[in-house]
Length: 516
Image 1 (cartoon, rainbow, N blue to C red):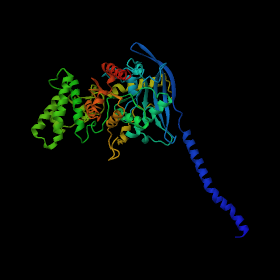
Image 2: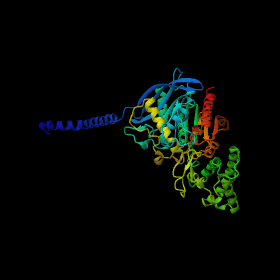
Image 3: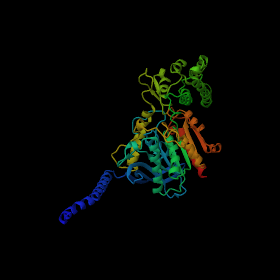
Image 4: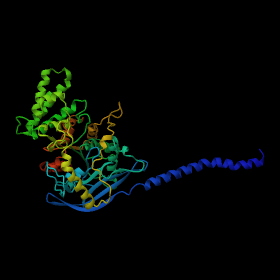
């Protein structure tokens, strides 16, 4: 090749060699620009710090409150969520020995407002138990039943609730599922613990309702993924096992688990004949009937004799006040929405689901399911109003965003779960994190469990709670670490004055026993 031709081709070869490097550099710049653009779109985390005091048992507890959001990142250091929380830290306490409690509600899709303003935080919403607190002005007062005399408190709002939102490239679906939720809440707890120097502190989880499924998974996830061992787990009106706790499915077990709460509700509303004076004696009879007569008949199915069926139908009428004919036409199975509608149909009233003691006028008196749950319009406006007033005006969180009390996330929730020890099928389609909890209890044999359950809870009936506890696969010696307390109230038993007092006493005794 002539010299001139070689000289002319040199720039072309140079370009061919340099082009990939230039393309890679351009791609890197593009990625950096995209990352910077995405970062610039992420709002500044909300942050409000203040101080306060709460009077409990004649003592004044001074605390620092931090309310806002924590920016969470994934393993690639990419922002994924602004996680809302409120922390109350006792002043002048040794963080190495002072317990800290992480608490949340359930749903899935419920913010922590209910526990926050109902029983745990320094301020408490005042409601007239059983009445409709639907018009203001509403009241909040010093909460003499707060746990702040025993432990620091971190109220958590999972993504999609409160002010917690996905950011960056993350989407809500990345957080809205059993395992996704367990992972994100566990990551938040570990991160908060690091940021606040609390690795030495005794640590507790408290979860209400779906917070039970969350807590079973989080207790195990914290231990195995973060080496963070809990001192105790508190389950309030827990929902733990999808199959055992959902009446309305083509399975017999949940109907048996619901029966004793149907009986309790009928007793409370005086809807049964020959009503005994003692609730407890009545419930023991209803429980025995459910296990020894009702369950075996359901198990037999079509092979049961007509005499056996009739005998059980008569018992169902005796304990629930709903006619044997209705139970027969329903094939001995009704879910809680039908029960709440049918029980007081002759009075044209509907009972509550969250708290079956609540009652109000029914709608559509020939309907087969209740149209609404009287509990929520009775107490919801008071809780929402007092929380927003307290959070914005006292704690000083300044934002025009709506605090999401219930995001309805359950409608699109991924219920599948990678259950510990399950290797044959991978993820199971519906969660039972009592399995996770059992794994955590065995691997952390010093961890203790407190379960707090209302008798008049049609959302998570106490029969389903008893079922999951009786089927925890733990050694007999570890059952000494399990405490169960019952209350003559519903799902949020802490709105009932006597139960509110007992709730605090039971929770305080649980922490004292662990720390003593």
